[in-house]
Length: 152
Image (cartoon, rainbow, N blue to C red):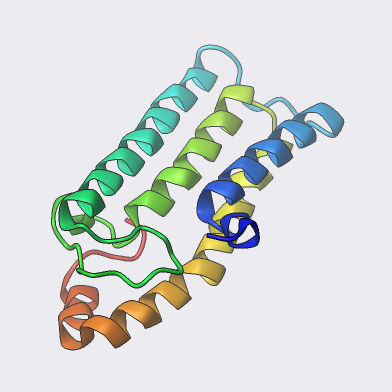
């Protein structure tokens, strides 16, 4: 895969969001919202995000399909964690960044998970859903209408 395409993958946006979050915290932190012990809820959010990504990755591996948003999936995964969210791995990425912002406890870093959510929701998900609908037709359309919501 060319380097340019790798830079346009969700993990690159995760890293960019974390860098943005730390930059905002250092440069313009805003008011302190969460002190100890409340900020420790961020550990739960980060753990949830990591767990969602591991679970989704394992399901894709079992189905022998790609998790590359630009790839052509071989199978439609609708079981396991995908019974609860159509995009659990994206939910996991946002949860990781939101958890880190919670740990930091200042206001400005919370812009990073909001921005990441927007990029995924408006940039990646519509393209993926069009591809899945085209490739899997009625099976995917039924999953969308009768299955889980887009996020949670």
